[in-house]
Length: 622
Image (tube, rainbow, N blue to C red; front, side):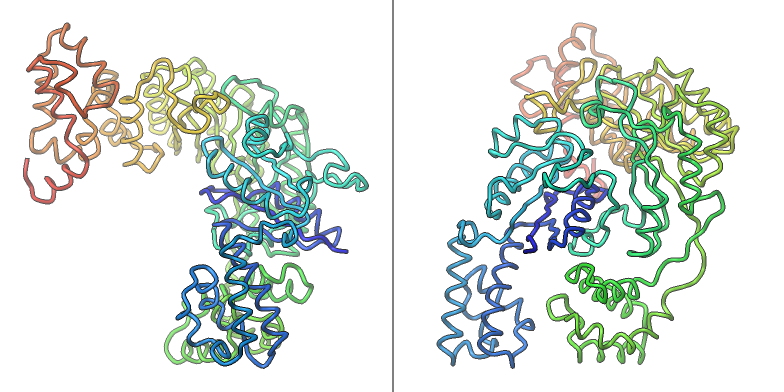
């Protein structure tokens, strides 16, 4: 008998889809099991399941009524008990049996009977985890979801946080998580030898949810696993302790393209690809996958993909939703009489909403809608790109591997720049990459670890100077260090490094807010944002936050100069008092911190809130 499998990603925001769950979905579907993927409020999942149980009973009693049409009203009643929501639902007022069904399932949902063992739907429940600062939402998800599984032994928890904090998760949920990757046979079923970690991804499950991942037009893969370095700030040695030098992806890409349609980019999450002795083989396999230097792709007709997968029975729920999305896109791209004609056709066949669209109707109307979609999907080729998204190691960059890398359309080349002490190695790596033709570069810049604030400034400034000199484009992404295993900080993002403080952290965040989290080329802009000298940067670190965020306004009306003049006039003894107060970034009760009038006058500038600053700007007042 086919098992019911529920795979869940907690309802946090993230850029990339859960590759682990996509592989697990492939595993269970290969065994003939039914797989459901969910990301969202889990109460909506159990509400949907409750409605499905009720709907089955309703159709059994009277199949002449299209009960799916009334799903929103029925779900509102099930969820909140609002009887008036059923005013337009047929037979509710006239058929006692139908009325009793509604009342029964309302009680079922209200009393959370879906948690009772006899009503649990799923044979296996798998929950992925990500960053440790998502602790609360992840633990709540696990504790809710485990009550939906028929057997406690059927609950699976894995992923990043599960591998880093397994004992804490077990203590909080009673579930012993899986640590690391699923790289050995028999890990989910002892009598099955499939290795889950090398299975192709099931992209179809992404069609089942409302959430849209920002990176949604790419193949996702690893070509290596692990890292040869053991950086103290990094969790990779625990997540992937064994370095694997080569995992070919071309076959997976071709399989995915055949099933789910071509995707523009190839996004590789390797942690240290240059450490592989088979780097040349990796590049050749990427080219074999369709990502040579000048390769292009034509955006697929996603309506055709959805219909094809409905015909083959590949995730009906997901591809019914996909069809409805495509119909909505079709309406957006149509105008005038044509749009009206399409709308009326969709309305006639109940294809405007997810809950009314039916598989048999979608297949029956395929020939009607096919010509419309042939007109909205262009056949103009578009460039493809490859992204080694986790970055490459500057210490391993050579002329040879950068020349080989230039055989594929890498954009950007991401080079880690975690420590100022490696700046000469990093600079040489950038020059080598640019000489090989890589003009679009990017890097992750770790701060708040063991670095000093000025070292962050030096690294950012070096990138801007290299852009000017080499004619390249380097986008820097400062990333705040977070000790993911520290019992005091793993649930939040409050950690402050040895050489940092709350005000300095807040200053960097305030500046990055205006640059959307990245620092690009443009020396003049950089000097304005971060200062043209070390002293100007340090001045910014101590500048009131409102004056950083609304810098042009406060400079124009002279308030910034007044603050700096009054601060500069403080004696060394007074600065020894005020600086720790500023560094604490707490200005709620300054009179309790000092009775020095000069210090208090300076501290009042820090009490200007963002809301107050916005009102001043709007009213043009000081």
